[in-house]
Length: 296
Image (cartoon, rainbow, N blue to C red):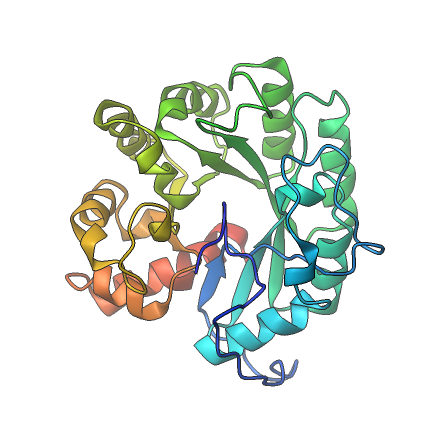
């Protein structure tokens, strides 16, 4: 289900059943996923950023990704989603904001800014104050993607990180294992910060010693791991049972209180958490996010 750093909804190969979005009067269930990227084929209205790290083929995407995504949520029986700003749009959040405005009860969003941009902290503050549905900002750093930052000790990174803490939003990290030690120092420099690590920290992009430092981040308060990106290192979809020895170790380190679901099916969660209670699974499939975001 994953494509690149998160799930991109062009839906080739998916059997999407169109259903209407729940009415405002209906209770939205407590199932939440945090992973999807929105792309639109309308590049005139939503052009790719001049500094984009990559530019996908827009013809593969729907003109209205929101409609397609809501159909996906309805089909899977998932109440809500957190939409992640994709890299090709850079710090232009126009598409994301247009979609969030249409579904304020079901959707929240993650922002993206360039740490080397001295105005990035100010831009983040302006965005969040104008659009409180933006609940996080994302940093990218792993082997093969060093263009955003040189180190998590960089002044630009720390300024943007501090702004996120001051705004009380989540710091979302798409990192590889080789950045875990740097990230730990940044977390410790800002007590109280809330951190979400994407895609199991891309374990295939590091070695065992580096990943041990990822697992050690579970010792810190308010550090969560996203249960996503299994398809980045396992090929037995849809449930990636071959990865169970790995996910078992991560679950043991972080525990069900510090894991959130992203880009995997509810059945995949059942497969990888078969030794856990239904209540523990419910934390991973939504309750942790709802609590973290104070999302009623």
